[in-house]
Image (tube, rainbow, N blue to C red; front, top):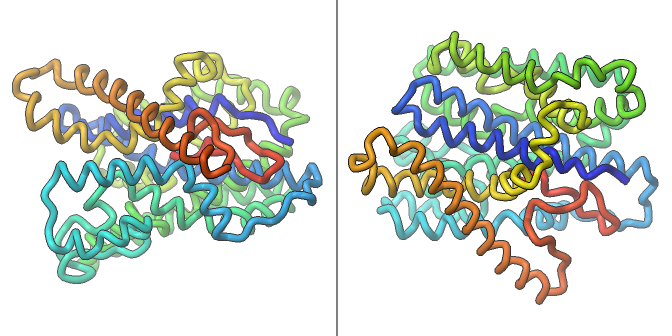
Length: 385
């Protein structure tokens, strides 16, 4: 069927860690650039899920029953929702909540909180919007739920592309970033900056072209699998140095609140992220041995729990330890986050495995461990963050 693509587990942690750093921007403004890596999760999701669809279709897996949209979504959520629900319950206890929070709790429970920008006192009321109220970082999961409904038709369409058509499509999707940026700018010009920012920065509309880029990139990957030693080996062999080197240049040259930052936030650095993803998926990149090492696999395993629990842990540690630790706060926080994420992952995964086994559903030792495609039609959960 398809290859395991296990190097992408560690790559997902790298993106997750960048987002963790962005929440420490009070210590250094440039750390806020880490927030641009949220879009990598959408790119990765489109890539891995579409790759599973395309390779299964190429292998002629017609004996596999076609899942309904609800069944497909249920498979995606099976290993994700328990972690999210656990953090949601922690947030209920940890923080105080307004009446508006409780009124919109059902949107968070059903992962619909990011689909439409809703504020207290209407669409232009009190910040933050519903998407950021209970589990602030989980808006991306709500957006993924929206994109999952589009995976199979998008993958079917992209599968018809030639390599040239796929590359042209990637170019067009990258240029669509300018449209998103102009919408953001026009919203600010007409006094709708809060609504526009919420819709584009924390909603499906702002990253749809990024997700579709992942879908098309999966087609590029399949088209190049037999040809990469001749055409792409040199480029893919230094994909991560090029991509990460250019990203660091952006970080040091441009401010984290300027137009270049906002352009990059919603797709402006798609070429760099596509290069990084394609290089690591092809396993020609020098970063791959680190990503596939035992430590890299552990980091990939905890990336989702690390992402979800970060805000709760940071809030608690800032309240009780920041003044005492001083300059040591950041390293202590990052080490604590790693340990807490590891324990949280192990605990929820063990409970989840027991429940799924008792219910007669196949489960993996860790939610991120699943083959890219399988005989029962369950796609990889590599993209789950």
